[in-house]
Image (tube, rainbow, N blue to C red; front, side, top):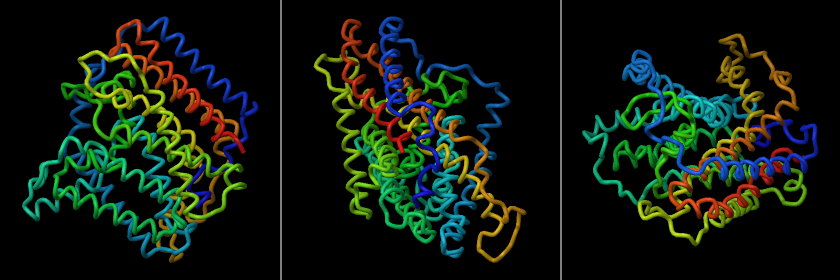
Amino acid sequence: MTVLAHGVGTRGDLPVPVELAAIAAGVVLVGTFALLGVLWRTPRLHGADGGRPLPRGLAAVLDAPSSRFALCSLVTLLALFVVVVGLAGPPETPDNLAPWTFYVTFWVGLVPASLLLGPVWRVLNPLRLLHAGIAAVLRLDPERGVRDLPHRVGLWPAAVSLAAFGWLELAHPEPADPRVVAAFLTGYAVVHLAAAAVFGRRWFARGDGFEVFSTLLGSLAPIGRRADGRLVLRNPLDGLEALRPQPGLVAVVLVLVGTTAFDGLSRSSLWSESVPRGPLWASAGLAGVTAVVVALYLLGTWRSEPARRTDRAPIPVAFAHTIVPIAAGYAVAHYFSLFVFDGQLPFVLASDPFGTGADLFGTAGLAVDYTVVGVGAIAAVQLASIVLGHVAAAVAAHERAVRLFPPRTALRVQYPMLASMVVLTCGAVALVLAP
């Protein structure tokens, strides 16, 4: 799983020392903060009211129920096929389509798809279609189920779902075993379909970790939905500002950052040379790195000045949305090369999914082309994604601060956040680019 779960040939390739790259990234972040303090003294983002409406014809096509149903049906059939291949296909990971489709095409591909097009998994989610069928058979209210879902539950179930997936990917002894992948997908579907039968389809927006992940990343997409329901072209930061504080949001974003940070640490020489192999050590490392990220965030959102009375959310919750671009930047940095290189394998393996010697699409004999992009370009994309993610986070944090605090204190309360972001930025650059 080492090759499958992580990028390949992506560290140590920047044409400058890692230390200088980390320092430069921190300097960019501090400079951004200084400029914001001088030039951005009042709220400027429009949030859920921002954006220019798409042409009505195009919006009608994108919102057409028939189109959405067709796409969701196709993805559902593909998901079921992947589970079948995982159970009945070749037992060896290199020859089985299921793990490559799940970890690369789906998990990694969900990042660029959501960042470009919005919360795509909300539209394509097979669990929503399967739940609609179950609700019809059992004569359940598909929206509300049989019990209310308390508001205090928030996104906590999604945080648990993402933590479980992170453990599977990074700590399970055989995460790429096709049978393990099929079992996880089946168990995941059973758990969430059962919860949706009780609480209705609103469960998926709060409990399905993959859908919540796509929704959060989709807040940064240039295409979004305005408060009046119109599809619009918008400033991605308007979409980020539109994210409202809710229970569990902090947990979701910190789980995402923590698991990705451990992803980088676990494939470094520092980890491999000093820590014994095994799921126990990996689980401890995953928990420890996530705890460090949580501590940094809580220290960064500490403040003594009271916020304006119009905002009742605790400060860590009020600023949780600022971690979304950091999570996005980490995901792009860690998975870019994996997507470019190993993302070719599903197209190769699809020609012979059951290992019978077939060549359905004429791709069975192809090999991964590692010349598609150079190692220097990969390192540059990694560094740029981390820095841009933190810069976007700094802008979002500044916007929220000037909304919540009086002008004289809005800048001062961001000092701890800036310090935390600098630590995270330099640490992320070191983990991604160091050998």
